[in-house]
Amino acid sequence: MTQQANKRARSRAGCLLAMMALWPALALGQTSPIGVGGNGIKVGEGRLHPTFDLETRVDSAAGYFPPPGNTVPGVVMDSLSSEALLHIRPGFVLELPGSSVSVNMTGYVDYVHYTGLLTPGSTAVSHVEGLGDLKVTFNREAPVSVEVGDHFERSDRTTSAALGAGVLSLFNEARVAVPLRPGGGALEVTPQVSWGVEFFKPLGAVAPVGCDDTRACDPLQVNDFDYSNLRASLQGRWRFLPKTALVVDTQFNYRSYFQSGTNPALLLNATAGVSGLVTPKISVTARAGWGKDFGAEYAGTLLAQLEASYLLSQTASIKIGYSRTLQPVAKFDLFRDDRGYLEGQALLGGRLTLRGTVSYDYLSFQNPESLGAEGARRDTLFRLDLGPQYQFERWLIGGVGYLLNVRTSTDEQAGGINYTRHEGYLRVTVTY
Image 1 (cartoon, rainbow, N blue to C red):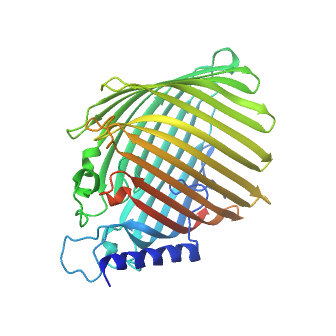
Image 2 (image 1 turned 180 degrees about the vertical axis):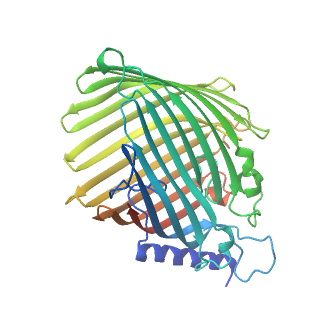
Image 3 (image 1 turned 30 degrees about the horizontal axis):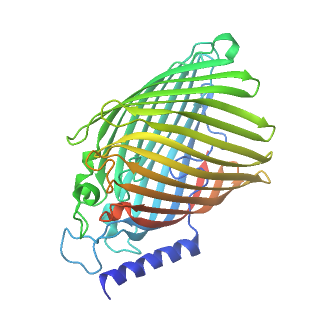
């Protein structure tokens, strides 16, 4: 059997297992811990809730692995292969409420084990992921309050739009915000400053067979995307009607890169619009604005968001929307994301939660070599995420679901950004 045939057979086997077993994670997402349950451990006026997740997953595009029967070190297949994975995820949720000082902290460590059941040789890329989020609020109910926070995450789901599967991301962002609520709270203005860094490394140590474009498919080159980002923002909300507000959001990002080859970004994004209830069951958000990078000679672009939510009942809702954003990225300077999305969720019987999301992103990369030319890179990304979760006890939640990711790019040489990914997963969460 040829290597291509082997690839198709493994892909079909992974997809079949995913569809038959339906082994997904719970509705609250792949990296977010389950909501607090149980009694917890009393800490002052608050509670510490230890959590433990056990998740099994079948992934049809888990990574680049050696070919079957390969005896030559440093050789991997030219396409993403399927695998069965096990996530062991202990964590905690800490809540310390207070009028003068309140603390909220969430964290977990996730050991991701590649079992080798579908693709022998994959166990070598087993690794540790994790998440930590801290928020400390001073004088929460006063006209002037202060929020200090930090978000840390290590994950194989990178936030970089230019990179695809097979990459680990290490991200950290610290932030300080000062919410101002003069005149009883009808007007709220929040200046904020944050500083974040993100580092990338490959899941594998060598380039896939047939990789000709090191920028796009050689995992040893992903550290070219490492960056530092300083953001200053000003958000405002004025409720000129009881349930309708004028909203303003202005952000300025200074993005620099640790490796040479990408221009620093001086990106200003500003939008304004309205958000509120149209009827007791329909809420709408409509914003428009402009984005401009002053660090490069690019024309500005229109920014927008149009979103509508419909309350089907007290426990069921549906949301539909469109957004356009402009963000910096290594190698290409900027990218524009035109995104459409549909979300729905329902709570049945107080225990069973059903939810589903579908989205489509059209990514336009504005690299200096091909901006305005016929060969400029364009990517599309389709996502489907659905599945139920059930609360058996206050401290025990289980769920199943299914994920589909289809990504295509005009850069056809890069397998990590041209793939169809099926994932089925099952998670059981215990919260004390």
